[in-house]
Length: 442
Image 1 (tube, helix red, strand yellow):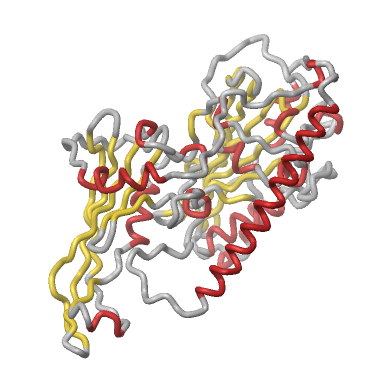
Image 2 (tube, rainbow, N blue to C red):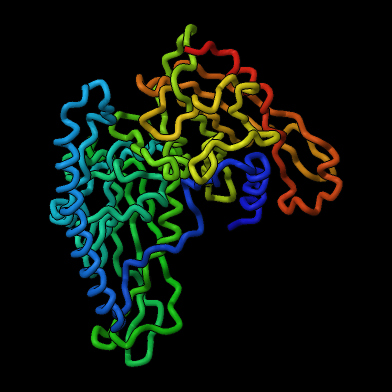
């Protein structure tokens, strides 16, 4: 992790020492996937056998739990309907078979809409990513059997499982990577010829039938050694430049996404809820300001900070007032504190699961403009937007921007601790507190 990111995370840790740990919405420096695979080693068979055994056991458990659930439901059928809480009525279950996407892969890889470059365009709606090379064509958000969504790969781009297109007619944005053999770059033992790998990446407005961004990346660096397997083929193509492709695609993925009832997180366990700050931070609600807006019902407060380092960015998020074990945290100095004295929000008004939220408060901050320079360290303002959201109606009813410009000069007595010679001013905590406290309670 870059040192400046570590420094900012340390600062965030000082601000929220008793809150749950920060979650990264856009992870960086993660291992890149390789399209060209080496020969699978022998131990893989035993691992596959173990997986099959565990899956069979899991299926048996699910069947048993389903039977128990049915019995439980029949016993509770006499309860009043007012005791039943229904969440995300419009959300559809995640399929367990994505073969339809597998069968569409070759057609999607051949798609060549007209170029209509738009530098401000972003990935939107339901997303699919097809990848084609000399060996095969595949949809990369799914496992090799097209039975599961690979969440680790989806989340590294700040997407969620619900944003993956489950079937072709759902696709709004298509990301297309087509890799072909490039120029000869050398020879290996056994007469194997090495070639570069040229990969053209296209971002496509699928329903609008237009390519809004496109770039070609080349890996022409020969590997020092290759597997003997390639002696039969007499040629070897370098792996795709995946890290460069990943960084390029991330530039077109917004940090926050327009919300829908389907995209709302459903997290009912307090421990899981305490760790889910990132899922609520990237929800973007339409703005419909209401001068008579109130903070009503149970409340969740999300603090997030956009960290930009080089060509990469991270959106770190924290759920305020809740410890990582799902309990209510004690007030921490210099942080947003959800106490009755500070915000007028008592402990029993803090939501501990998603279905309890009636008011969501997002405090989104990022580095602003330069305001001073002390001993060679450039100090930037801390710009924070506060959104007060009627969570049930899915709208932002109040919004205000604050810019923190206060800093302590003595902090820079040893400027050498600031390797990049930059820092951010103090978080405008008091101003934000007063703003939130000004809302009547409903």
